[in-house]
Image 1 (spheres, rainbow, N blue to C red):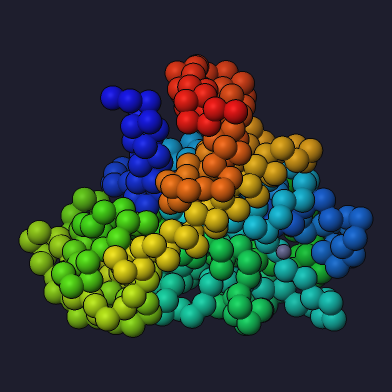
Image 2 (image 1 turned 30 degrees about the horizontal axis):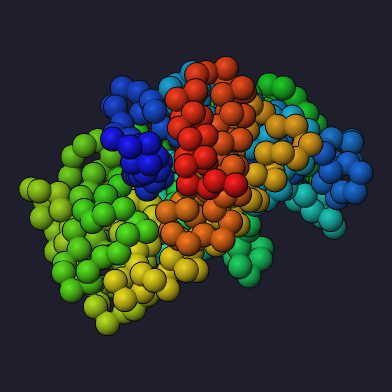
Amino acid sequence: MTKYFVLIILAILVLSACSGPGVMQSEQRPLEGINITLDPGHGNTQAYDSFRIGPGGEREEWINLRVAKILARKLSRAGANVLMTRTRDQDVSLGGRASLAIGHHSDLFVSIHHNGSENDPDMDLPIVYFFGPASMNPASVDFAKILLDSMRAKMIFEQQEAGAVYSDHLIYSSGTSVLRNTVNEMPGVIGEGGFFTHPAGESRLQLKEYNQLEADIYFKAILEYFKRGAPSAKPLVPDSLTFIDLGKPLEFELDDGFGNTFFEEYSFKVLQDGVEIPTRWNSKAGILTATPDSSIEKTVTFQVFARNLRGNAMHPVLLEYMTETGYKWYSREKWFDAYKEAESLYSQITSRNPIALESQIVLIDSALHFYQLSLELQFVHPQARHAEEKILWLLQEKQNLLNIDLSEAIESQKERLEEYYPE
Ligand SMILES: [Zn+2]
């Protein structure tokens, strides 16, 4: 096998890891192996943000971080792989938070916030936001409802009976950045566990015991959600970024979250570019067959909807393919997108903003993925040498940071540079 082949296989492994559905869960430890990203909202905004502060001087970003840290420990103990978008009072860009969640292949994204009111110090109630509309995001809504119910049952609010699950389109017409940029891949919510502008609310939120209570509520809601299983649909076609024949039926292998095929009978739906197409469910085989509209050119997207018998909806991950006629058009456009993404990740890695080692590794792996992807998508790649050099640097950086032996991959990348790009 040539070195070049090894690289291609590596790239394919990275690709398939990106598109795979969640792991099969165990009944006893429902969080075992589940990837969760916790996003403590804001961070290090004291210099310019005079709004997110309570009457007693407590800042929202501090509360968010305290709750998230306790929650991260609880989740890790239960077997989940937890990634935090920040672990100290640090400003992380909204786009950076979403890329971290995607790089972590998260099964759930939880952004932890607390609310404030500029003109009503009496206001104090919980809100959980999902990326709207609800019909397009049923798994996030399922989780949001579980979380809100337990906040209302166990936490203290001035308006104890109030509180709601809302679409984030009520805040901004295109929704919130973190949920919009993660929704194609994973369910997610923004939790607002009370108002820091309410004087008694702020005092509560300053208490370590109350932060622990709140973290426990998130923990139990996450546990309850995954107990019901996170259903997934695996397309039985080549990985996304390859092209498919729309003249043939499209098959998806469904899993209710426990390796079974127990789904509500009338819950199946497949959308092609947002429009429902005919489906047929074979419960014995666990295969959902869809008949695509073959008149489409260029790229095409699919989303699968179903609800398992424990009441949990599948998150309709956006599956993107190209049709044969659109392949050339697609790769011409996409190699540059991939390259641009890689460059942006690279500049985050080399920026002077210190971040946690775990996050740095996620960024490095994502950057490697996108540089390799750009090379695969475009044979005549104007920035090819540059991309290959960056891949070498990233491998070396990863080896140094993790203190592991990547010498084989590094050597083969060096050879590749010499053989294919002689100066
Ligand atoms: Zn906030």
